Length: 124
Length: 176
Image (tube, rainbow over all chains, first blue to last red; front, side, top):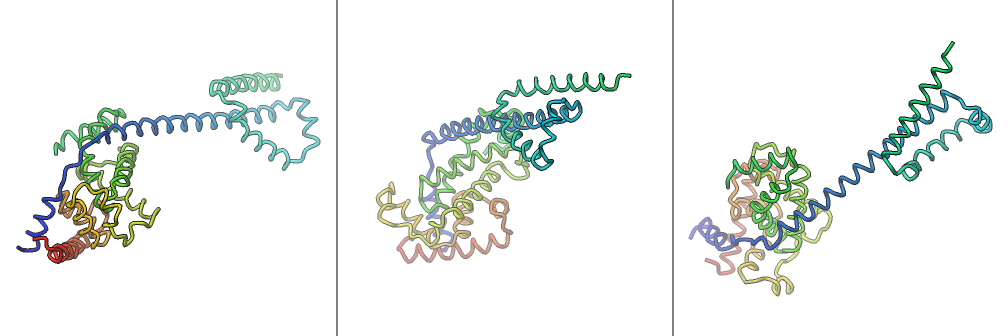
């Protein structure tokens, strides 16, 4: 018997079928769970991005309109401290603004107020 | 294997995220994937099944990467091979480990399963991979090249050496 015949005979006997035995169900269950986790991660990432944009819009609003109360507070803080506090506030925003709808509503309000404020400032 | 149906099912998965279509693909290809991984894992059925599950999860997540230049099973086995290599890097327990230890012998359903793993243990990892893919799963040199990422000449070298070692082992152990 040649080597090829020997190997062919050996592997013919060794090529055993593998029953499913619930394997497909296990894969599909795990797949459903991982899809749900991925969906929640995407939702949280979107909420974080909106929160950061909302905070940026708030900062822009404050800089543009310069409410007297903020000016008074800023007089006692240097630029580095202001930046650090702003970064810390942005990082805490996801816990402070858990709802995506709230973030969108806040952005809309800020946009309207900023627009109105700028119109008032630019009015002759 | 109905290649046309595989393409139709993968299109449904890629376009619509159809879990039903993917379930059919899993049913169709789970045997080949699990059997290949069982040989690569040298008879560790639990580990082979875990790696097979990971293979299908990665296939689901990366279904957009299936280019249809080769069959779906070939693409699936290339994922399975990378999953196996990742596991090997994570745990070094497959290096030079004798297969026919007491626990393996107790769990083996019959002596044939023990014989094939004992025989395959004399091969290097690449030789075992190439021999499994060609001699058990019936893949061509080209398919093995795509699955493992090594050149055709390297695959041929591994096959030649692997078959010589196996034939010697089988003759020395009275298999003829």
